[in-house]
Image (cartoon, rainbow, N blue to C red; front, side):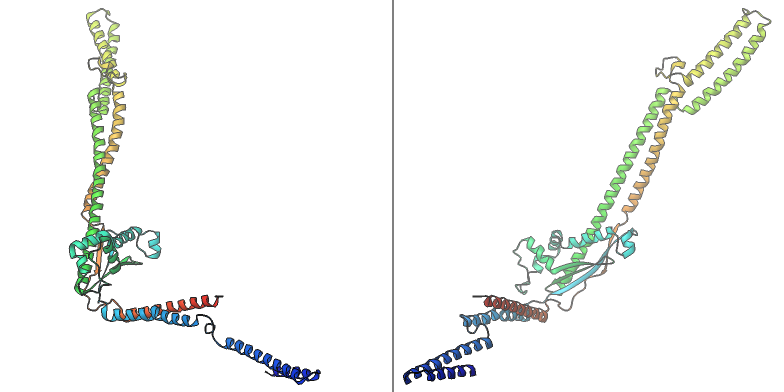
Length: 433
């Protein structure tokens, strides 16, 4: 203001200093006053813009204020009021029944490296536990519960609120999704403890559903045991039958070999033939000696000498025949001479191979018989157990919904959403041309 006043005095002084009439001086003063007033208005507008908000003097500022108020009611007031009314007066009480159990092996489970270091159960136990928890949320579990307790009827009571209850007209796929919301199963490590909880609209229904679920899980474990035992026994019986067939074929081959060779026992036959040949050879030596001795005193054509010679030739033929039975090439024709029939040596080779095969088959047969007996004994015991150490009990107080907490969470979420909406609107408004 002082600067504008000084400019006015300077302009007036200049006007007075210039030669002219009084009218010219008046016009100069009037122009100076108009210029000062214009500058004052511009300064006031700038100051007002600097001291006031950004929306008040823009186009549509009133509409923006109404829009903020409407969004506050729509995003915060209405949801908060609706949640308060619903959780305070409409929402039905839901009761929770809980059970805890674990899956364990009948024998002491093998502890792998990870189990030894961390104390976590072995992979097989965790796998069986995971199978059980997945089965709880499966379609098969829902079907079994529908047959036993009427799951649709229990979760669609007439006094239940329309948001929490199930519509019985919906298909079974929707019932499975609803079951996953009201039932939960979690595994606690280490130990592999399973915690199962289910909620319903009455304490009796919650306990009834929990008991039925635990019973169905026990039936599943028993069916797994029966399947494991049945498969183990069937596998052992197959191995035993295979070993028995092999042994029978080997025994039949030995019988055929004995019939074809005419020898029951190669070792005994060889020993007998050898001893007999030895005795005949000894007698032959004695006769040969006697023949040589008597030949010095008697003629070779004498009757006694010819008889002695005949006996010597017969004994030599017997020795040759016995030796032929041991070493001559085999001939399976039973009408052929003894020296050309199957020999003990060839029979010993064949019988030896069959005997080795028989010993191997005997060992396989014995192992298969022991495995079958072990499988049958193990089938009488359970391989896995469902140990329920916390049975479902009748709840006395509803745990769902948490009325005050749920209403508060809705209010906080609505307020946060409205704040984000206002912040986004302010950014958009400030960047508008």
